[in-house]
Length: 355
Image (cartoon, rainbow, N blue to C red; front, side):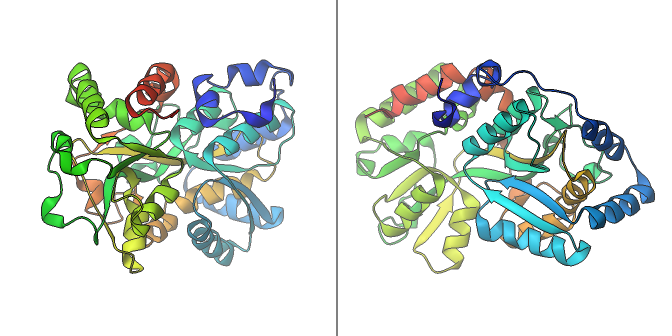
């Protein structure tokens, strides 16, 4: 088995079990795991003091993230300025972060302190015992949907699936009010979706009524030929260039950033509006455990303000946002993991992804 070519779908569908068992052995207990657990259990003023002092001595925090580089830089620059701890960032797609995290853990090569990526990938890392439960004193400030029962990853922001359109090619008054409106022949050849958004489809059609919802999207795709593009940023850029007049599954924050920069784009939401949590989690065997937990606390507090200013949707109730107050249906990462084969096949069948 060639581990270097696992796709996001394959990794998530497998729940990482096949990859983990292939040849690298089982996860070994390491002394640093006990240290991280003890630090994670700290509360009150003692927690902040010990984490800050320990992080200063460690001098660095290693972060694997799929957050856009400039956005992560805004977080790490503020963190470094406050604590004098250097942030070492490796950025890649969520599937590569998952793959690297699993391979390193199985090989007992512990290089990462904090994972920061999509919740389905974080859930795989949790199931594979790569993460440790957090006890941040700031969890009470977050929306309930940000905190899974195991607390091994915590949602820091929401990627809200919205529709985006090129304002030079589509008039605002012509926008659809419902998904049913996308059956109109005027949308033929103008619609596109991202290649791996089966969790969006799953939550959307289950909210509509599964049989009815699947039939509707099949009819939209059959009548109006929905194209498929790989990558949300790419799809957003194609909307801005006019190659794709309207996209159905882009993240609202990216379109908002592009709009604020003068691009001819805007976004709108159809019911149901699906939100995919993005999260951070501390590695069980973090080589810099003080800095790891300190960064997690930072992203859940001051980091939330920074993310909000950059048009993300923070999960903190203390950061004002009209979007985290709108009716949202949250994508459940367990659906992606446990029923992934079903929804990925449906996604491919409906949108003819392989074509």
